[in-house]
Length: 218
Image (cartoon, rainbow, N blue to C red; front, side, top):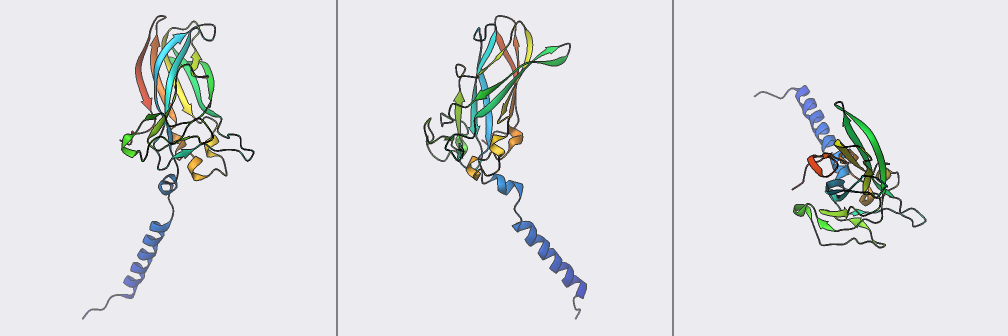
C-alpha cells in the first residue's frame, strides 16, 4: 500500500489556509453591499427659455438608488444637512470637431425624496422619504429634479449646433466623507455621470444620444 508523501499534506494545508483567507477577507463588493448606490437615472424634458437673460437650456433629471439598501441623507453634528450639492452640470459645444466648454453650474439640493419607481425589480417597499426631516431615496426609487427647480439649467447664449451636456452626481464627493454611516455613503462614485448629446438650431432641441455610466439592474 502506498503512503502519501509528506509534502502533499503540506500543500493541502497551505491550500486550505489560502481558501479560508479568501472567503473571509472583506472585498469591495461586500463593502458596496452595505450601502446605497445613487446614479443619474435619466435627463429629459429639455426646453429653451430666457431664464438667464438669453437662451437657457432647462431639463429634468432623475436620481435613482440602485444599491443594496435605502439611502438616507446625512446630517452634520449641528443638525444641518451635510450633502448640499447633488449635481454639477457642464455644457460644451462642438467646434471644428472638438468640444469647447461654455458653461458649468452646480445644482444645490432642496431635498431628496421617493418620487417615482426607477428599478422596480429591486424595490422593497413603498414611499418612505419625503421633503421633511426624513430625507433620502429608497432602493429602487428615484427623486425628480424637474426643469423649473433651482439649478436645473445651463446657459446656451448665442451658440447653436451640437452640444454635450454632462451631469455629475456628488461632484464634491460629499457622500465619500469620513465618518458617514453606511446608509449615507454612495457605494460607487465611479458611476455618477450621465452624458447627453443634443442639438439646438435656435428653434428646437433634439436629443441624439444619452450615455449612462452604469447598468440598469433590471
